[in-house]
Length: 337
Length: 286
Image 1: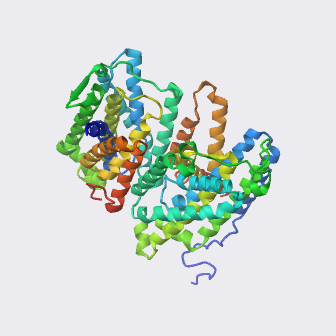
Image 2: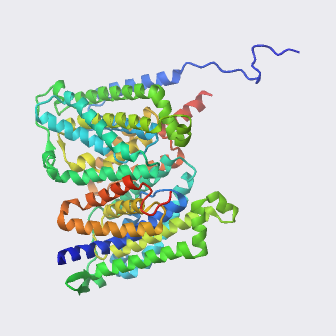
Image 3: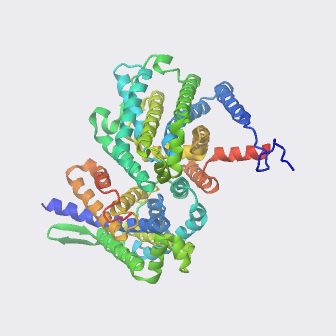
């Protein structure tokens, strides 16, 4: 008796690698939704939500590289966001175009990331997280004493002429801010994707899943963590650079508060840590939730946004720590099969 | 010189409360291997428990100590059963994030119920007391909170190190599977660790309202100080956490005298320095 040669020895047919239609369709749908949003939605309030959500999505994309992919959970990313805000505010004050400030300031943030990473990457798990939290708070506690950065009063960005080159637009309609933010987000996501696509991404995930095992099979753990923090800090700083051009003001509490650090981290976690979709989904959800409840329910001084945000985080952690993206993926697979 | 002694005393007295808060935190870490980022906010809730006792029933904060301790033990056990137990086997990210969710949730609930308006207990019993020794003045509130915190810390340390249940608690912290084989119910020990942490936050909160304002963010500073004390003392070490708590209080007090803007910077700086030289903390083994 002979075994038919089309069936492998295990008796099961090996499924051919299917073209990931779902992923491309998903990207297309989300891209269209993001592009038409300001065309359909004309109120300044909702467009502001969009601008803020995209800004936070960029910052969280940066966090995600270190926290979601490499598994080094940082609660100090406001330091890099603040670097972007302060750096751009200062240089624009000296007559630079905000666009020209972004890369050098991102480089500075990356160097800062290296500096923080060198001692802290010896620590694992909780120890690392507490250290980043302490560094973030330390920066926050020093800033009010730093005169060149405006001390406790902060810095204002001088009012520039309207135009794309100055990232300064008419305030009545946020469409131009929105599309600028969207463009930056697209660039940041593509940069993150390119960064994570090859060996670096696999190595970082190996470090996240089991650091000892990764080291044992020859992954240079420390070096790759340092790569991750460099890219992570740079991306988060770009978000800060853009943000300061929208709010035109930076002070210690708006740039380096612990709640900003946690927001950057938790947005990625709620959306899906370790997925490039996560920050986008998390940012829209969290920012919309926050702005809506704050505006419509806070007339009495009783806000429910914190309560809802807290409950959402707990729910995600308990139900599916891989975030909402994973829930959607699971749902999609169930529908498909 | 007198200024210095006064600052040192003030620092040591607040340090005692840091020590109590840190011991509760380190217990949960030592046994469940989880950091509770909402620890400071449990203290904040305890402060509101004391506030409610005072404003509704006219109870002095001293009388409210046992009430707050029991209430917070219940709250902590509920928190454990509701949201901590489901993530015990989950990823480290989930374990860290869930207590951040709790922190946000607690602040939100308290702000919703009590609004953000700062509250204050008027004229507590200890408010009239004032002791002066060699020119160094100590208020009754300081004295009571420091003595109370030290007693509670000592009681917790005694329980963990000297009783059979405490030994079981430590055994679970060292090796949960091994302890289970010896007939210790690991799950009950986790719950007990949370309950003890709840007691420590309850006592700390009720002691603090004698001279601290009460608002939804009141726990933040104590939370931060207890994380740092725990990391400084060595994760899971009860004595290390207590000593580090007192040390942080003293550093804050003394630094505040000379560079008033840098108290938090100094406390964090010491921690980061120790971290670089001795990553396992002052008394840590892991």
